[in-house]
Image (cartoon, rainbow, N blue to C red; front, side):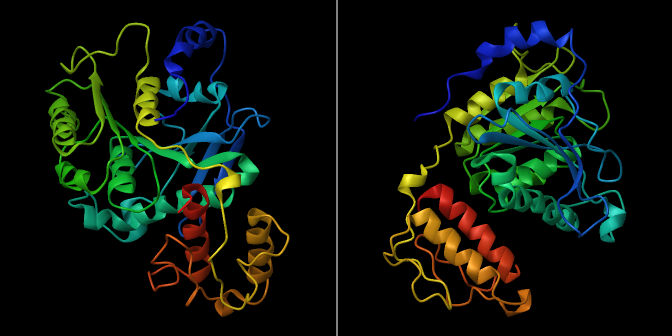
Length: 339
């Protein structure tokens, strides 16, 4: 299916420049993506803003859910080179176990669910600000190391966020529960572990076994590591991050163009003319009515109950989200998915 040309061809150029450059600083620092917890902050590295909307890599650090920060990025040089290729990088902090009222160490995914829910708010925030940052909402993917790799995988396979894949780095011990989620989605999963078998916390068999489960259930996957891990080495002259993005791009349908988007047949409570021919383009129609509707009263007065959107049968139904989030969540996927 159509996708960008292979981006690994840029590796040689990037490698030649990297030694002469300092690590790129983020364009936006300490951006608050949610008021749920103090640590809900992120940094953003943006490609040049005169280009097309950017594919976006959302990175979650490691630290056993009790430590770490958004400054801790494994394969940092590879990730921070992405904006030069037109790909945005977002590195996130998130609440730790004590912040959500849980005692470390983490013992199961249920205990971690409040952390996963907070991390999902990153995706909502980026959708809501995609025009400002020039991001392609149909091409969001996640990455993470250790604890961050658990977050990255759960967001892909256990939460309906429209993500396109995960870079799973340093798959931790005691996280095999995640592999049972793989058959819930077909997003590619790229594994990378450098630890030796006798290293605490990240046995290479974790990645090897998870990679095999992916193959068995039809999830596109690659597996690389280091000599000490005994996993296959990244081919000479190439980079894991770019190989992973190639895997994801090759297996991700592209979103539609604005000309393909239609509001015909959609209804919104209190907007009798919505979706009817009115001389406005469909995108203008959408923005015009929604802006008016959203500004029409206190947030507690707004409701999606009874509203419908073609291809989104659950829109307007009770789902645990406040109505304003419900609206943005479903519409963001409807706009890029041509449902």
